[in-house]
Image (cartoon, rainbow, N blue to C red; front, side, top):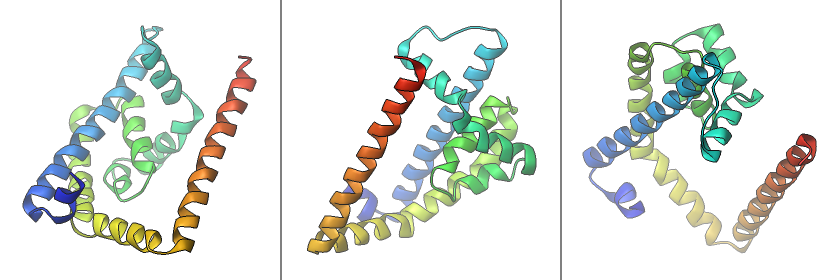
Length: 168
């Protein structure tokens, strides 16, 4: 799959990535909408997975996306596709504030196209070049390993603090 994305025909790679990002964004929006609907009905998810998703959607983590949508409106959605990380918050936030689906979708399409264009041209090439450069150097391998270990440690510490704070 990675070979296809890096070296496949541009039109097919672009179409594939557009479909992938469209479906991901729609799913994120739908999960936000679902969470808002549960809240409005004072209902709760029936599965552990659903409970975790709703807990994240109702947490302060999604507030930046909601605040940006309230402050700047629809342009936040396509612009979020040019960021790393904020895209999920904006898409979930649009669902959480129960933005009409047709408005969200019309605002989302240019962002999907821009995202697919970036990743079908320079995105994967830059990623591949960075990994290749890092893997070819002992210092690069060291930086990758230390970075991975630091991320894993930060995740474990954050999770433990959350569990201690919730009394588990």
